[in-house]
Amino acid sequence: MDNQVYLKILKCFGAKGTRFTTEDLARELGTSKRTVYTYFSSKDEMIEKTIDFVFSQIIQSDTDILEDEGLPIQEKIRLYFQNIPDAYSIGTIIRHMDDFQRYYPRLYEKANHHLDRIWDGVIELVEEGMNRGELHKVDTVILKLMLNETLKKLLDYEFIAGHQVSFESGIKAMSDIVLYGLIKAEPL
Image (cartoon, rainbow, N blue to C red; front, side, top):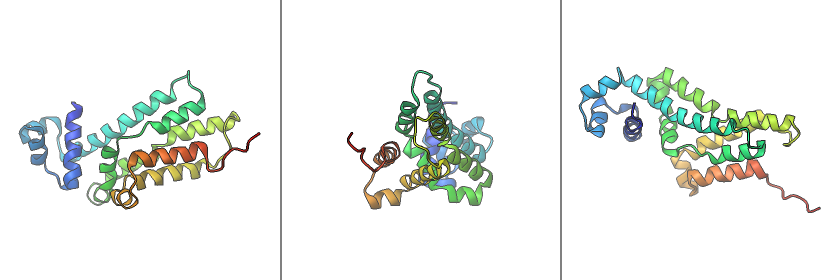
C-alpha cells in the first residue's frame, strides 16, 4: 500500500480524531469511498494499519542502528537518540489515546504496546554497555520510565506550547542529559 494513504489517514485523524469518516479520507485522497474500501475493510482496519505504519518506520530505522556491527555501543546509543520519530505521526496517535481507549480498546492496547516498547533497543544497548563496563550502572527500569514520560510530554501540544519548546529540541535536550549527565567531568 502507498505510504501516502497512511499519511492522509493521519491527516484526517489529526483533524478529527476517531470521528473522521471514510468520506473524509476519500475526499483527502481525491477518490471515492468505494475505492477506499478496496484498500480497507473497515475504519478499524484503517486505524490499525496506520498505527502499524507509524511504528514500523520507527522500528526499522532503530533496527538499522542496532544491527550495525561496525559501531561501538556509545555511538549506537547516540544515533538511537538522534533517530527522532516523526512528531506529527506519533503525536497524532498519542493525542487521541483517550478516544482509542473509549471506542477502540484493542487498538488502544496495540498503540500502548508500541509506545511501551519504543525505547527497548536503547535499553538493551545500555544493559550491554553496563555489562561490558563501558557505561555507568543505572536502573534501566527508571531510565525507560524517564524516556517514556518525556516522550509523551514532548508530544503534548499544550506542554510544548506552554514551555515554548519544540519536540525536536526537547528530544535533543533529553538525549544530552541522558548521554552526558548533569555534572561536568573533573579536570585531571
